[in-house]
Length: 607
Image (cartoon, rainbow, N blue to C red; front, side):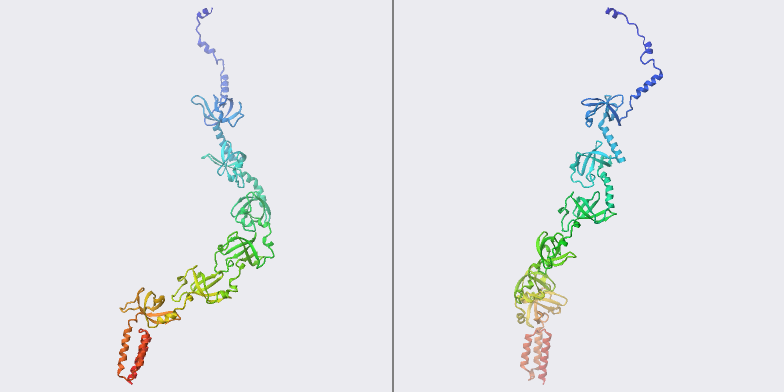
């Protein structure tokens, strides 16, 4: 049967007739337009590189299928939905259209990029509209915190966390806080937020209320928010005030941390207030009575006190008897020595010492102290006159040099003066520095003692006998000595004579036989013109040494003329001869006397 059917011929199909009665026929133009409009509404116009909303239509282990109203659905990796663990079919999410159709004809979407674009739009909107954002603190970084706003990491500076300085940023990690966007930098994808700005707005009303009611002498409670070398800043509830280091305690302190600590609560008094600059000066010690008011009445001038050195200056040191009560120990009151020295040679800060009250003014709250008064004044010792009797020898240290002499310290508090003229018998010393230096040890002899006026005259050359008694017999007037010129001035030259003594000669008396003048360093024969023992001065000449023989011949010639006269006196001639030998031939006074004697002899011869 079946074979028969298969073998039957199939009639030809009239496709033209079928085209008229086929699919889509029988619709009017109005119906067609209505159906086309309905179809177009099921598709949304989609542009690439924009954010659109899509509906979740399918979820697998690896992908999420989204319908964005396009001709095809898009597929997004499920990793981009980790922040939505409870997502289900039918949920609406925003995605970014990367490509309408890739090489496989697939719609390419990205939720990650959509979140970034949306986040920046929200950040800009929050910045423009001054909106408060709820941020999550992710981690700490240098200088502040990193917070998450709309999925974007923003920087929260440490100075913008709170109105008071924050020392530990770690306590905020993992917490949520409200912030405001204060700066956006698209070039670096950088966002800066602030939490402090929100607190300041809350404190503005409170601050204004405090400032309006602020008065001098008012006691307020505050918290130490910052500490410096010169003081601490105290938060008075939105208003900061400065507590200077000098107003912390009546006693001296080196740093505020000696008595105070950060975040400490304390009561302070308002000392001053500048309304224009809004500066508040605070005090802490003013809440306590002044220590001078409770100073023991037994402390009077002459009392012995004990305390601690709190400061050492060039002029002295301050001794703290009790916190807030100090006395000055001037450097001159540290030792009986009259030579002022550095106070640090006697004491250092924090030394515990005793002192004697020299002056006391309770009203002015001033006190001067001394420590040398704890020992006996060396000038009032009973054995002073015996110890430093005239003629006694002592050794001391040179403490000071002056133009007229030097001061020697024989013991602490006992000084003596050695005049420059009492340093050497033979050398003419112009300044003590030519003979000795400071801190050198020198042996001296007491020449004079005045205990009442604290004066002691000393000498060094007196350790030896006066050599000028011997020099008087050696350097007689008219004697000739080999001398060396050591210096020349405008009118006189200095000569070095035997035995290490010095002499002087006029420049004109340096003329030599050839008419030239002797220069420094030359050694020549010099004749003594004058020997002044009291002035320790010897006057010499060289130019008259060569003139001596001529004078002798002249003397002989003149004495020969009255040979025929019987009245010639041999005694007179012998006396003149002896006078010439003893006197200097070049001395004008000697020649004048000799001439007078010769003329007198001639007159007697004529008679």
